[in-house]
Image 1 (cartoon, rainbow, N blue to C red):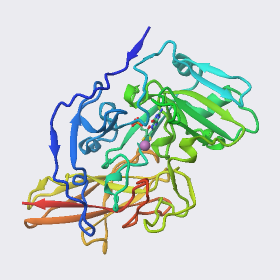
Image 2: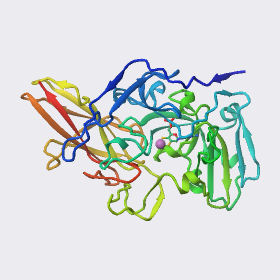
Image 3: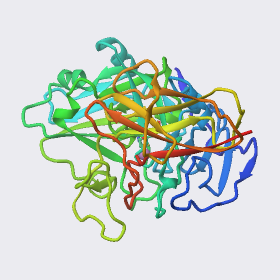
Image 4: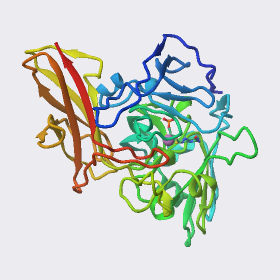
Length: 401
Ligand SMILES: Nc1nc2c(c(=O)[nH]1)N[C@H]1C(S)=C(S)[C@@H](COP(=O)(O)O)O[C@H]1N2
Ligand SMILES: [Mo]
């Protein structure tokens, strides 16, 4: 019997507690990615290297920016986000089954072995980004996990296409939605179980998949071992972890986590709304909008006068792919192209570089803007009440000495 012991969720505060002076982000000042959280605590729960702690019950851990200098985010620092505090303490891989039922002719109970032997393996590189990534930068501030830019990670996912599983189960005509549930449970009966759904036509698009591997390894338990739904191009809220139940429905799914939570204003393509007159027309969050972030140098690094610095960042969208990233040094009046690294697939993030050699001491501010192959680009301001889909043009202030 192979069983993976659930790792002790008591978080060991290993390294240090860093109290950054809580400078409230001021309008019209370059905002960088390190200054809005009052407290930063680095922890190393078992199976993970040191990460930023948001909450320990349920576990919510952010990836430090330095790990974004790689094409793929290592599993041991991949961000962690759970809603419900009751997670299984142990998963027995021999008895674990993925149940597929509902509007199907042949209900299934699949073991991990079945998934690996009865279906053709499928691999895709895709960015997994929390809808609330970068929420701490919203102005005015909004409630919810105060993530900086590390509630995301890029990985190579291997598993089985959901389409193949649903065909095997002989999903019937008239299927409308498919819902997904994991082994995590609400600690109180009053909290609704975390169940998400996709429309049937999306579920069988041949890209949505059930992953048993991430970057060539079994998933870390904190990332949803043994199975995670992967929905390329869509926010991670749909990427149900510890996936154990797939239900094919002949009517629309109306659960709490689709109807009441994770809603965005319908009127704009990037979830934008006005704090003074909130949108009344809302819809479930879906595809990721286009954005770009700075990764290096980090805001507190000092660069050398006369030397060329490789400014690096990432750009990504919901699957149209990145056309270009541009950098401005004059608050957006003029833009110069950054150099894009290799394309790892339309659902992957794309690395970019921009060479800069300061000629004198001082402070330099850069803005980064991505445009996707559809021509969609980033605004200078974006806001919504839930702090979702952040895609404002970011700036970075660097000191040269
Ligand atoms: N079963 C289950 N799956 C879940 C969640 C959850 O709370 N329970 N959270 C979702 C959200 S909001 C995010 S951002 C991603 C995070 O995936 P990760 O923990 O592997 O980074 O998982 C998604 N899948
Ligand atoms: Mo999320």
